[in-house]
Image 1 (cartoon, helix red, strand yellow):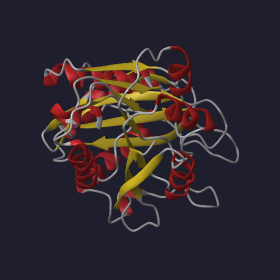
Image 2 (image 1 turned 30 degrees about the horizontal axis):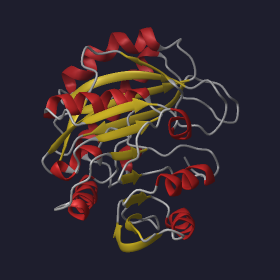
Image 3 (image 1 turned 180 degrees about the vertical axis):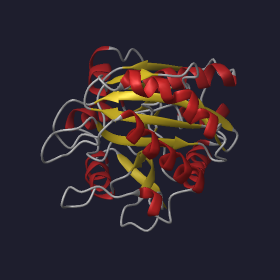
Length: 304
């Protein structure tokens, strides 16, 4: 979307992978046939607000999501799913997301999956993760692999009785840490992400990981029944709230791994945590190539 609220055709973007260009081209043709009009931001008319496409590292599996203003267009889209998949066999999951609010919100809470298959698999290093349509996927696969590997290397050779993974998503960090962690508990507000994490742990035969769909602050205030000696945090761009920072200082883990997509809020939070912790190492990751954004991973040890 441009600043003047007009859309950009990604099929003309040289960064769009060929298999996704082909899929979008097919969808554009079908939209005309079924009469599903694009949403007009200014006039607040039309049904289709966004198309979201996720693909794994080798383009063997993917997800197509139609973000709609209402449920009105779902039956028409459902009829076209076999046709779309016949042209693009790598497309395993098709869903419709309902976002009725006239605001700059990418998606809504309601998701209806239109295919028998509900997840795709993505391999990071030696770990296979499952992704439902609403699960967050890192945008650059090889950089995400390096991020998870760096986290695993930080704890390699050590032993932690119980780790806590806050904003765990689909379990990328939780499931990558290996034998250094005897037990790990992941918390994420998205039920679909937690379902993906549980599915991945089951498929990996990892009975040391458990995952909960809950608000992080709520979980820390009511459901935390143990004191972790390792805490991993991977918050959204806004960083950690004052309450979460205070709680981490109170439970006093031996080590904190902090992954952030915002160096500014990362620096703010580290300054607060430095009351009891020392930042031993900081690694940058160019997760968003050709932009000014960067991901960072910090390794902190308790000094008090």
